[in-house]
Image (cartoon, rainbow, N blue to C red; front, side, top):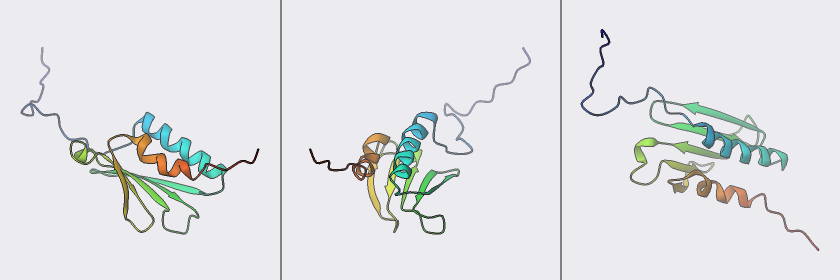
Length: 115
């Protein structure tokens, strides 16, 4: 009876930090593991801020990231909350879902086999 519930005018408070959920990390880390096994990537970093969460994959730890997967929830209704950035920072792809965003990276793993 003594519980006080704050009202926010019908809107939930903004999260203090944006993060990848378990399913998103499963997709990303699955791809990362296959790229490491292929010898293309060697290191990664995850940054979580108030506005965005970023997964960066490196060829070597001392270089700039080869790719960055960015999650920005405020773009969910417009362009899509996921962004794939290249090494120079150029936007390679935007998407509302993570698997189509990672498709160009999956193609790097395909190898031609002779029968």
